[in-house]
Structures are given as C-alpha cells and as structure tokens.
Length: 173
Image (cartoon, rainbow, N blue to C red):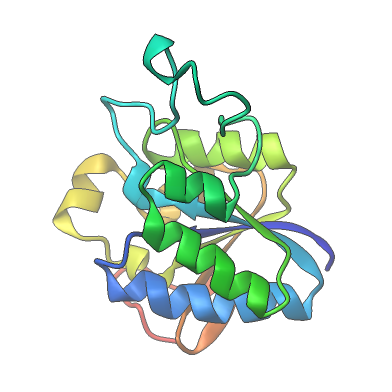
C-alpha cells in the first residue's frame, strides 16, 4: 500500500498512543505510505488550534488546517511534543506532517481523511474499551468505523491490525 495514512497521537499523557504510534509508523514506512500525524490532544469544542485573527497577522504563511504543519510551525504554536514526534518519524524515514483537528471526534477525523486523501486511519486499540471521557464524547472504535469512509485500523505495541479484529471490551492482540 502506498498512499496516506492518518495516525492518531497525543501529547504524551496516554501511553497507549506512544505504543501505537511506534508500531503504526513502522507499519506505514514498510508500506511506503505517507503519514498525517493527527494530534487528538488538540481536539476542543471551544478553540481553534491554528493562529487566526488580527493578533497573529504577523505570522504570514503560518500553518492552517488546509495543509500539514511542519516541526518548526508546531514549535511556533507551542506544541513541542508534536514537533519532536515529527522529527523522530522523519529520522526513521517516514514522510510525515501533522494536523491539529479544529474540533473533536469522528467528524474532525473525517475532515482530515478528506483533506489529505487518506486511505486508512490508525487508532490505539485502547479505544475498543474507551475511558469514561471517551465514552461521553462518543469516541469508540465502532463510532469511528461507522463515521469514516476509509479502513480503520488499531494498533498497540504488538502491531497494527484491522479494527474488526478487536472486539469491544478487549484491547489485546
């Protein structure tokens, strides 16, 4: 598979994302796919993570949600953790950029898939048994699968596999 894959990540608070990210980046590299690193920690109902308005008028050519952000742009936005994730992936020979979703959940994921022409999405297998907060927000493997028009995969330290192979309530291989 060549093409584009959206790989979810976070700011380092949930170890499931780090384990999944490593396996998913290796999986994408082995298939020759480019990667959109999708930062779930940027999801918000209240704010847009991109600079806009008159207070950022001096940031000409800065990132917006129509293209992938670079490590330098992420540093400018105060997202050092994400810039580091990009640099690590680039050193591992993965073509990669990052995207900050303008809203939470599957709708924003669908926007990323459409904007960047992704062929697949990789989520942490822990979403098969979502936390209380994810359940309240409606973030489950089933909801992502029903909302996206591309293949939804899950990953963890053991690798990447079809989301259909993970049943609700289990996060094992």
